Length: 159
Image 1: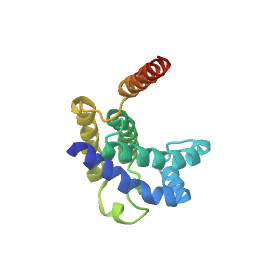
Image 2: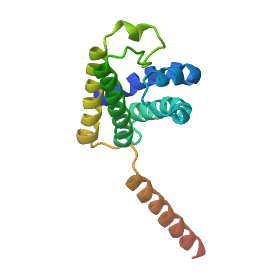
Image 3: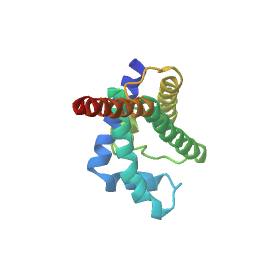
Image 4: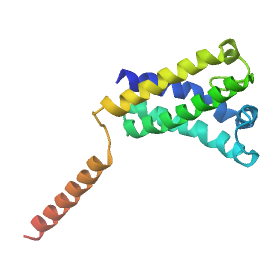
């Protein structure tokens, strides 16, 4: 549960400024020099909302493993993007928690370590968080039981 909370809160904190200012986030993405221009705006709009919904899902325990899988996909993309730019020797603003501010105080290596730690937290949730508050199997059986109860009541009312 702690891993879910840490990962969830981390991504909730990371998504706020990106949702409020997607144009600035698009500039950050453009600065990575990895994506075609036609995809940058779509990425700048989708990524923060994925972070928001997955962060909330982890905190509230709704589909936690699915949320962790999506966030690990994002983290893997972040790790690869930062690694490529580190190898290139390209200085960039990662845009993780702010635009051009506090993130710049950290080296790319420190940012990579942070993302790798988050990746392993997500992996932990994927592999070991067996408790599910909500899953499709539970939803299906709940609906099945509700239908069965409705049929039972209808039959009982007729007699």
